[in-house]
Amino acid sequence: METAEIRRLLPTDEAAHLVNAATNDAGELVLLMDTPAWAARVRYCLGSLPNKKILIRVQPRGG
Image (cartoon, rainbow, N blue to C red):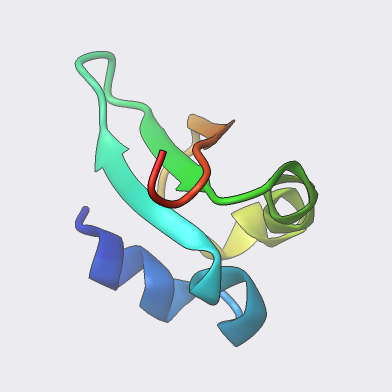
């Protein structure tokens, strides 16, 4: 899934802090959030996403 697709599935606040979304070689959806606080918040939204295996990582914007 593309980042834009994932943004549409997340609540507006969480979507604004999504840096990137991609599927890795193991078939897991990897979400890159811009701060640890937003990474924690997006964990509560995982039920709205299609993948069963989701990894959440932090990557500050511009970093």
